[in-house]
Length: 302
Image (tube, rainbow, N blue to C red; front, top):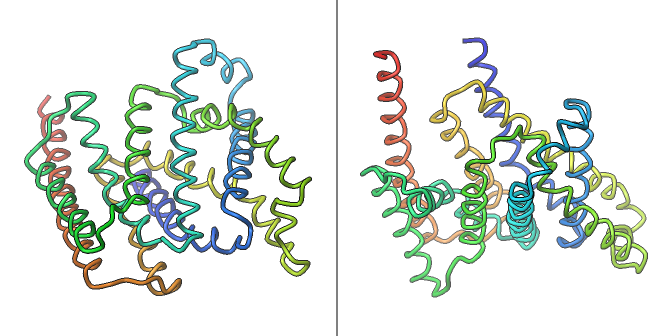
């Protein structure tokens, strides 16, 4: 029980951390979103490398990279998760926090779709119902606003492909994030040096009284790695149903922040769309609970 409580606490901390991160990204303005993205790529690679060197031997770190197919998968995974990060950071600083929430709400359902398409996974009646409600919620937005919520779909699709690509890549979280960022880090360094030297980077965009924001920017690698560590700890100590359920804390907090703190426009039709998606998530969560309970009973009988 102590281990379970620790895991549950880690999952909640992780989700709350991710949920309030829009505040941090907006604190960094007027630094351009593209500049933040390049710093994040570099600093996440640095933080994960330091953590990996403290945890594993150099041989353990380098050994998996000898497999060329595995190496290619990690490079592709790095490109996908960087694209996901980039959409998210740009959207937050462009005041589209609410649309990012839609993306993170439909993301688990989108992962199910890719599981069915790529891995022939079974789609239960609960998942089918949840997907139907999610599609209906998105359809409401498309019909009313006459535009596809590209930010939300971009976040959901890129992460779903990323999750599918990583399905069989069983590596510790620290090593995974290191492999996904280390190959992009040299490009990030080159771009950072160029934009800072040409007066287009973070330092040039800040006034003398805002230079503390550069210090905040330098923490983005740690702020990314910390919740990943919490998530990894949680995944090892609690069941997948509880872990999945706590992940809805993050977009819910971000939604509240977007509406009440950032004062983003939130029309009644958006509330209707969210309500439809939430109904779908209730079906999804109930289905996952039933599956977990059945699996536990089967294991006990065995």
